[in-house]
Image 1: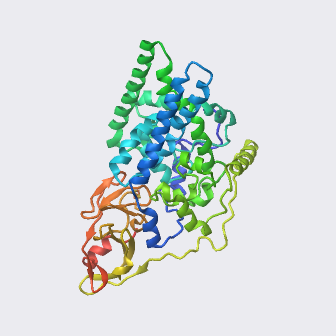
Image 2: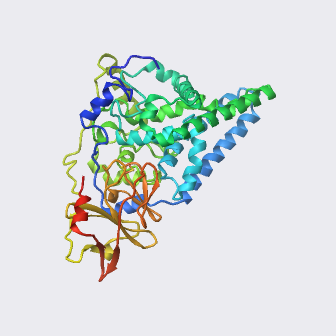
Image 3: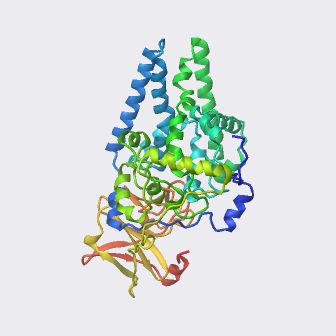
Length: 474
Ligand code: FES
């Protein structure tokens, strides 16, 4: 990229330690409260819709590939490959994203299965980008912390135009893949990928290079460029679509704030864009509630809209605003777009209440008929917090309320997925029966508590006060 930036956007420079000193790293972010019943409805996962959308995408890819092949000797090959490239190297981005969050399919194996090919189509190393995205959600647009600030200030217009064909971004990723294949991790990457995952990074980089080498060999044997035009090069010539949507997410908005309403942009887009982009145009909403599947983003938006700044009315309006900010940043890199908060915003009441533990250690959470399938209630008692939930097959569970990963998220704000509870911050999961971690990035278990339905009430057994105090809210 090369251009001089007005701040040090690396993850190992002075801004990294400064952001920690300023309390911006792994901090608590503003989240518009939603009642537990609505949260359960918004968090509902299914396989059917995700499978339909995935099959439609694959069918479009296969169809445009066939079309491009059939017209390969004519000028029609140019638009045919352009459409194929946009689907391959462009719309794979939102698939990679949704499968990485595990919010597309209810079944984790289906999300994982598709996460890897989508990563390859973008030349993104699966482990590196899984963890970089965890950090992006922890420290969104915090300079020195967020590895996914793709537009450092001042915005480099020449680089942006070159990247319409992936000319800077993709070679940069390929160079990093080559370094990782040699066993040398970038310092930035090593700062957010856990040490026990480093061997995965090296293995995946070698696999990528092996696949690319095989495609190049195929070209040599066939004395044709076409194998690379179908596998590999679309990551370049389809990159414009990643850029087209990605630019609308955060560009021009504020750095170093702990409120996604100030650093992310929600843009109303047409149904075709929303299919290609899997509803990530609702970007404020996604950052506030990364556990909500893409298919429910419009409903989430409707639910919290009164607490958000005015959404950008169209893609054209978003670019108009972005160009205004980018132009201003050429002379004043500190320029940021302001967001006007609605009256009374930030004061939406949270719904959880303090409960009292009885002499026998049991505490009433709520009437049984008020805890629906898939719903989670937060229970605060004696200085500790718990998440009490009912799975979609009806069983009751209670676990410690604070996620063990970065200890900034209440599990009650997350989702019940099968017999697991999912953290609202980075989609880490715990088995409800045992409290054991079942999905990265969590590695440490939460405690589980006996839960019953008795006399029309949901009741949880909390152990002795001493033990409770040890789990006091951080
Ligand atoms: S805080 Fe990261 S998964 Fe819970």
